[in-house]
Image 1 (cartoon, chains in turn purple, orange):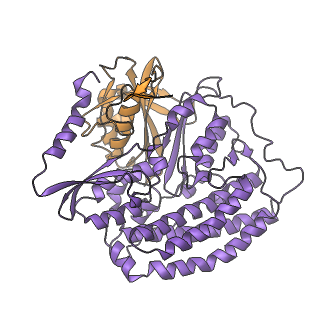
Image 2 (cartoon, rainbow over the protein chains, first blue to last red; image 1 turned 45 degrees about the vertical axis):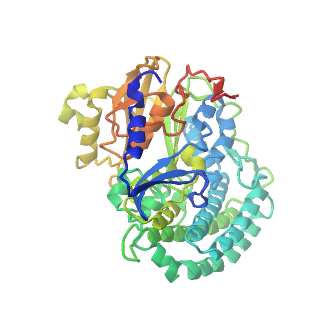
Image 3 (cartoon, rainbow over the protein chains, first blue to last red; image 1 turned 135 degrees about the vertical axis):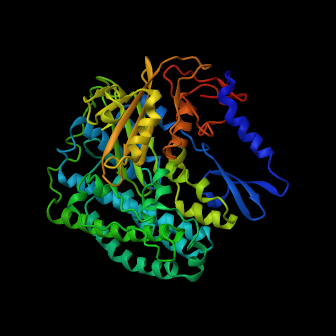
Length: 398
Length: 154
């Protein structure tokens, strides 16, 4: 790089690392550390067991999503959106597809059955994503059993979604203007069976983890995130709600058929002493799984009664042969399991390839608060804090 | 309200063609405008959703998507920057890190991938790419290097 001005920050950072005092130590956590949930590298400046500063290093999983999206048309980009937050692929493609449909003016013409199927699979995926968050959080701080239980139940969801889309994790199921296929025959019945099976399992999970004294001592009053800090850092999703703010885009924006569905928005209440601690963030996720179960039940009921499968129903009827947009820009946002997922489109005139697509990953913003939360905590608590943020590196690095 | 506070010259132009109208602001005013938008009662744009750098080939643009949690409204601000392509003189704009901390990582990303220099940013290092990467990949005139540390890229 030619202009020395652009290197100043790097030199300052390197100088800062060499200038630590003799009782301090620079400790590398990651990129291969199991509790960083992927390839995240944290540089800790520690004094004994106290973390004085956290410097996150990202980019180990950077796959140039923005650049790919600039060279492919909209339909071909959908598989790439699946790989952003690979634990909630349905939600990613739903957000992307919504943006393109709104720019096309298609969003009001989508049949209700398609919208209900979309919400159904998105909520199933949200449950799967939260189950991973809860299970791996348990294993981060030493509880192995909930991890195995969560993965056992998640596997049922994965199998159902595989049945519908043909793929276990990266679905490419939601298309611009429709769906890849209608739900397979018998899907609704099997899904109802799963819900009946899953409800008691949630109670079990609650009993083993939520009120567990060891779990509470590891998470309560740890990593407290006040609401004003959360907002200033652009934190969203369960993390923001755990700080006591009722902000859910499914309600605020009311996209898709969410206005027709009855569900609560769980917020953190500070039951274990402090509002916005790790325990609150965990609890909000558990409550959200319960709400997702309610949403899935309502979707199934509507799909079986009002918008039933018919022989002439074609989920691809509205899929455009070529997406032809005038030059415009649009920012679409949706509530992902991790928070607000946004796509910012800048389109070219009479072209099906966008000029610019930027994805605003919720994990990217949620993770940026780690340097604030990690100041002055114990190293062991930093693991608990990082686990409670629930990041997916595929989305942080994009 | 912006006009009553700063006068009508603050808004360079408006864009009402698309689905989301946008205001164009001069880069010298952007920090004052954003502080005003964040702190004024009735506006309270306390949440910066997104910050994007766009390469229009003739010029660059920085796009801010603001949101207000208490009032649930949104606003789009745009700043146009000259399109000089030299790697020695990147387009410059004041940093918004002092207004929203969200801007910190988003500005680092814009610097990393698009080559926009944010004046006053506390820690403007590359964020996604390695520190010794050359060029800014999201620019339209970016050409891939053949080798990186002796390893072929393709």
